[in-house]
Image (cartoon, rainbow, N blue to C red; front, side):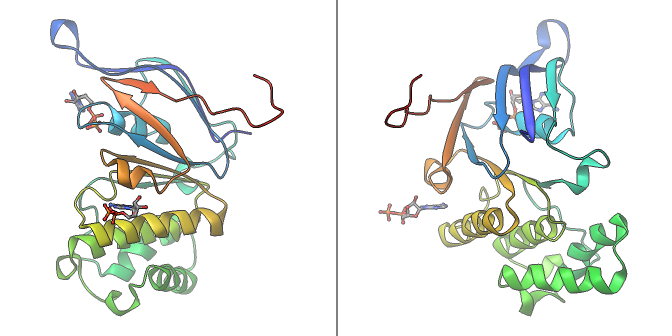
Length: 225
Ligand code: ADP
Ligand code: ADP
């Protein structure tokens, strides 16, 4: 079953003549394990779409369903990497990663072990005891990715995860997201305005002025349309 199905989804901000239609008429399906880039310029509605897919925002029209997710808290099954700094400043990198696990009810020892293991996967073990303001933007973004991966979500939604990063850090974050998709069997959707970042992912969707465009997949040999 698909993890997400969007049917004629729209999201309008505000009312009357000042209303902004951030997303309109979006139809899409995210299958388990899919790797999708949503490419479009700033203001095209990528972030709004991502929040709708995550269930963090409600459409003003249409429907977002999550048929492939188990009942219960969606936050445990959908990991969101937010745009910009999102770590809690008074906590170390390791504590930032383990806190959500503790909130999920994982015992403290196991949460700590999983946090360290996720940080190791992202080559951040040596920075585990650092506070967020002792990390570079790229390192902090990788900690935010580790925080999501440690929860072992079935769907990872990352909003411009490379937006603030230099090219090497950007590549590293994209490599880690695709590796995590392999290791966890998780679907990954990344929004970006950078076509090079998008190329790291198998499927490309485009967004322009609130409209989602999915180029038709070329038929395989022997396949009829
Ligand atoms: P992107 O992620 O592609 O930059 P957004 O989804 O952030 O696009 O924004 C799409 C449109 O919706 C833009 O015109 C933006 O100004 C507007 N918008 C986004 N969030 C809000 C909000 N909370 N209130 C009003 N308008 C918003
Ligand atoms: P060139 O130096 O020839 O322009 P790049 O170094 O930009 O090539 O890109 C080399 C490879 O790295 C390409 O496969 C490209 O898709 C990928 N790539 C480039 N920039 C990024 C990025 N910011 N994030 C992820 N992958 C990238």
